[in-house]
Length: 76
Image (cartoon, rainbow, N blue to C red; front, side):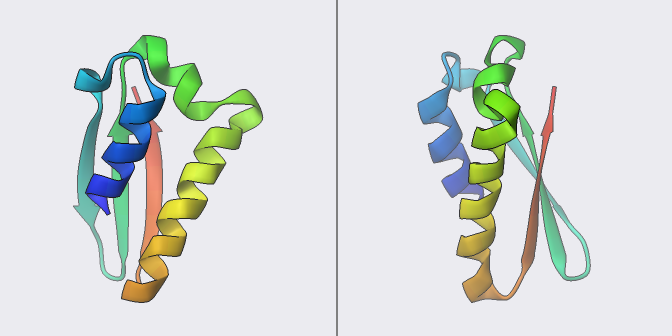
């Protein structure tokens, strides 16, 4: 899952070397903390959060086969 997030986000940003994903495990859920360069924050979130919502949809759909709940937090 982490590789999926990295692949998608690195294709969107201007500074792919500054993309980092931390994985935090909880009982039945996984939280991925995504951090990007401050100049790329708008590109990851998108207008009215559309890109962030699409990213969350893709990742949660991929997690259905593992029967896990997955959340993405975009942090700076």
